[in-house]
Every structure is written in structure tokens, then in C-alpha cells.
Length: 235
Image (cartoon, rainbow, N blue to C red; front, side):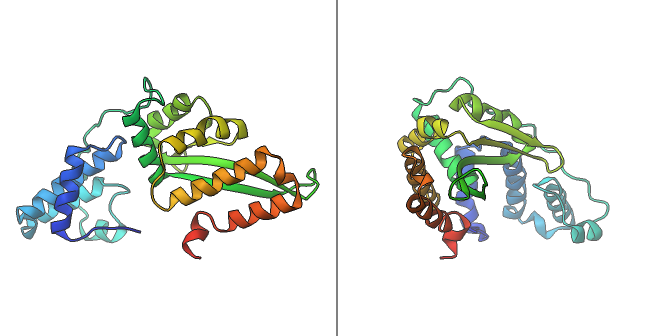
């Protein structure tokens, strides 16, 4: 996990996102965060009124106040969250470099490329292989996630009301090899997730060549899977 806690460093973070606003509903969280930042910058947090204002802002941020703060400040009312405009990919094309770079950055942080394997009585080697490109967000960004399916012209949307999440996933091999992978070859994934993408692409090539149906190909896929995503950080 990467985090910044030093106030002097947060100055740069706040200025960056003032100049380059967040596209998702997380922008509302940033605006609350910025208010708290300004209270501290003006030393008002050293007063009871300022402290209560910060707690009020905290109550509206992310998942709200933890239980210990609710008990300590029972009369605090959550600050009003600003209504931020809905953002979607509708009207944009994959040829738009600005939006393509934004998607690449967004997926670098929020997306996942992974290989699914499961026991199968219908497969000669007893194991089936599938690829999945997945982006999961809070349900408040439903409008954005639904536009991913329209932008790429493929994939499925799944909403889990109970958990408050929405996901965009692409599992069809043809859609992955013809649309998703070429897009991210052009607009590069950043950070360690780029390694996951490269592994994902390698397995897609093996599957296109039907090598996942051979023992040698399946063994290679299982090896690749063992080093991806969370496993990569523990190696």
C-alpha cells in the first residue's frame, strides 16, 4: 500500500487533483478531503469547532466514521457531500488518446487481469482454463462502469446490491484478443499490473493456439498463473 501522511507532501497531492479532477464519484471524497486539508492548513483544527468540522467531514468520507469515533462524537452530523457530475465513456472512441490514457491509468489502479482454472470432467486434462478482465467499483459509479461495456463493445455488467458493488468483466476469448488486449497494447498499463497484463496476453496466445488443451501448454499456464496478481508480491 502506498500512502502519504506528511502535510507538506499532501500539498502537492491536493494541488494535483485540483488541476486534474478525478472522473469518478471519488471526486466528492476529494472535495471533502480538501476541506479538511484547508482547516488544518489554517490551524483551525486546534480549536473545538475546527475539530468537530473535521469529524463531520470524516463522517461523509468513504465508509464514514469508525465505531470508536461515533462513540466519542455522538452528536456529529455528517457533512453534505457535493453532487459531482456523472462521467462516462459514451461519445468517446478508442482513437481518442486522452481518454485512452485515462482508461489505462484507471485500469492500472482499479482493474484486474486474471486466469481462472477449475476442475472439469469434460476436459481431457481435467482442468478448464478461462481468462477474465475485471473492473470493480462502488455502485455509485454505475453510470461509468456501464459505459465501459459500450466503449469496448463487449463485456458484462454485474451489480451486487447487497455488497454495494458493480463490476465490468470480459471473459470471451475473442473479445479479449480482438478488443481488450490490443487496446492496452496501445495504451500501456502502468506499474506492476503491466506484468500481469503481459502474462495475461501470453496465456491468451496459448489459448488461441489451443495449447491449453495440451499438458505442456496447461503446465505453462498454471506456472504463469502462480506468479500473477497477489502471488507476484509474495515471490
